[in-house]
Length: 135
Image (cartoon, rainbow, N blue to C red; front, top):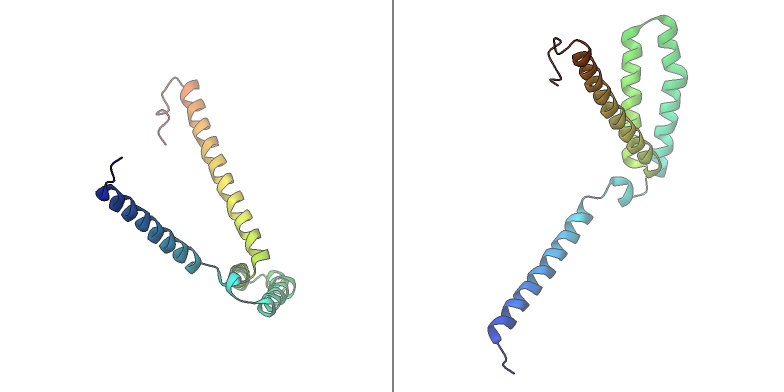
């Protein structure tokens, strides 16, 4: 049985490279953690929830009752900012945001499919005179 030092060094080099790559990948994955995973923001979560409830329950109805569209739009924008900040800091609200984003993407895909089906039906029933199925 022959012992080949060249092959052994190549295999050791590959093994060391693999270990270094895995270590680097593990350090990169831990570096991109959300703020809610790295600290305790329970007080800020509660404060943001109270602010959102105040703007939605008190301020927004006032803007609507007075018919001030700019105030209403600004209040809705502020609620959206607070809601996104709370979703960034609080994991229980972040799950809601991902669910809403996923649902929004599914609705967009469905709408695109329906538009394509409508164009195909129009091309079929007009004998191609409508311009075809160009997206």
